[in-house]
Image 1 (tube, helix red, strand yellow):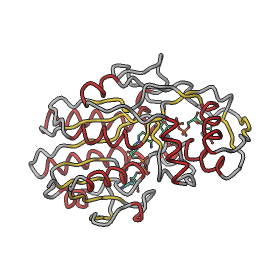
Image 2: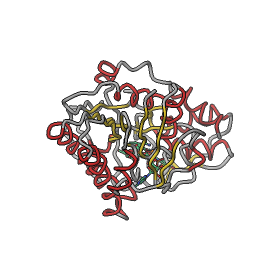
Image 3: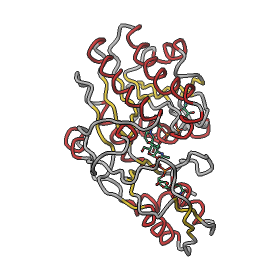
Image 4: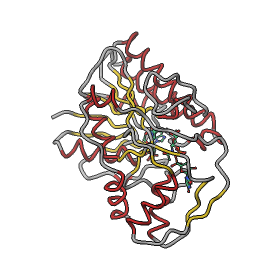
Length: 305
Ligand code: NAD
Ligand code: UD2
């Protein structure tokens, strides 16, 4: 039986990963400050350490005796990175270096799989976006995620720590909090349309995103942990299929069996028009199964609500 540390394990993606690790009989320790995560997201049998991922003592203690670390703790919001630039930087980049440094201080080679983001690309010149596309982040959040990738190279090349970075595109699924002001479009649309409420489409709705279901993200996290590479690779975690926001709204209404009451609001400032990734490298190296289709994933979200 292996023992894993999951930072941010009480959050949306982290809690699904924790469930998968427990289901295969492993032991799980979670380090989370519960800023956006919830105790009730965690199944019984998990050790929860309430603490800050940028606190070297808390991370050092949590890291004792584990076989690997899934590092997901972060302030997962572009908007928060604008209003609290320094605080977000501390959680997102300092927190990641704290994880690597705790392993260095222990003199071990504990492998780390960490969450990066499609935000590292900024507004890419062309889609679909492959991993070799230059990283030109347009937000503090994206810059810090890119910083995580650069420090992961240092962790690997200087300190011998195996690392894998996963650039998540737009992740969705049950437990993504629709009440959060930073919530993803799918949780907002599903909640409002199912309740017969109007939705707002920012701009003309022609902007596209690559929506990836949380179970597929968990499969990528688990496969990445098995790699233990020496060259600190990064992978897109995406479907390769673009969906426009207008088409998403229509599909949710159809699946919910509700009429669509959609209003077009002003476009979001600084909005990226098209974001969808090339999944080929992840498919080849991580050996991922087929992705959950958007229709199936949305049905599961609606069923959960
Ligand atoms: P989430 O907010 O549900 O989870 C983040 C977790 O980290 C929460 O439980 C929160 O309480 C915890 N946390 C935040 N700051 C912390 C700190 N300083 N110390 C300890 N714990 C802290 O968000 P999520 O969607 O599950 O995101 C998980 C990871 O995936 C994040 O690193 C995020 O940046 C990344 N990501 C998510 C998406 C997406 O579409 N959801 C896209 C790209 C990248
Ligand atoms: C996602 C991530 C963000 C970052 C970024 C990288 C989430 C929640 N955010 O931002 O963390 O990684 O990708 O590029 O996953 N929309 C509406 N109406 C609404 C809400 C949203 O039209 O009520 C639109 C929004 O303007 C955008 C699209 O839906 O065009 C997706 O919005 P989002 O906030 O879910 O995610 P995104 O891509 O802005």
